[in-house]
Image (cartoon, rainbow, N blue to C red; front, side, top):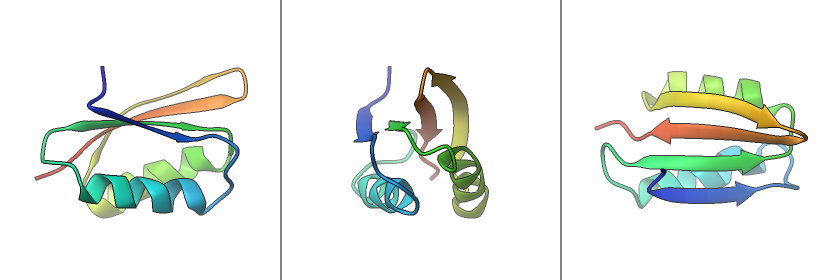
Length: 75
């Protein structure tokens, strides 16, 4: 279970990433953020975001038209 959930459904690039970045700033190292998105581009966006920020993309999945990401916040 994630420490926080960000519902970014209905938002298009770059808003899911921007909202995730803002949420992560308020979180501590080792906490997890679950992000829900309907933007198909968010799959590649969150992979790149985690590579660039050092946060860990723990999981990435889809259910219907909703994409779900679990990110572990880096130190």
